[in-house]
Image (cartoon, rainbow, N blue to C red; front, side):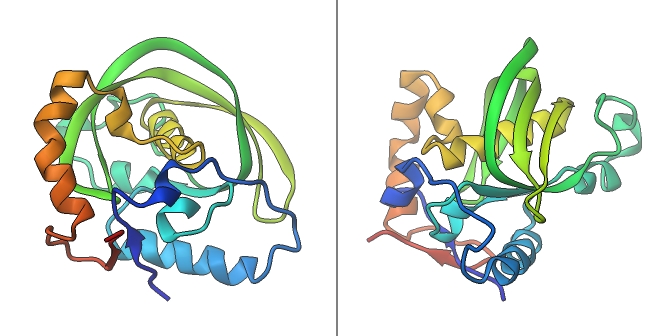
Amino acid sequence: MVLPIVAYGADILRTKSSDITADYPNLEKLLSDMEETLYASNGVGLAAPQINKPIRLFLVDSKQIFDNQEEEDKGKYADEPGIKKIFINAKIKSLDGEDWNYNEGCLSIPKIREDVMRPESVTVEYLDENFQPHTETFYGLTARIIQHEYDHIEGKLFIDYLKPLKKKMLRGKLNDISNGKVRVDYKMLFPR
């Protein structure tokens, strides 16, 4: 089932999420619904707070980027061909490499894209959908998506990385989003 994406302005997007256990109610259905929601909204990552669940869970599918990239962009990123993974109770262990700029967007903040600086690699400790533990290092676009989704479970948004003047310039658009004055081709849940 496709779930509505929580829009900017909702308190849950600013709440630090909680760990879950293997007996979390209807987890398998939730994972299936999140995956369906991710693809219905043309996203490459989706965190539980974005579907109104304050839990430490997010999905990443960077494979889509590489499957759909232009010919001239092939071989540009170290993480090609990307990954498709579920991250439960993730904890970032380290951020490494040079910071690099990339134009990011967010399903909860539609129609706004901005350049954000992030480190080129991230090492994450997490549980998979079977609650098996992993510690892995990711690079490139995959590392960026993981950092973006991880921010969601920490109550942080990509616009928090913008300079104050840039944020001030976006205030009107952000207010429109939180007031439901934005048109998207996926279901959204507005705070007001």
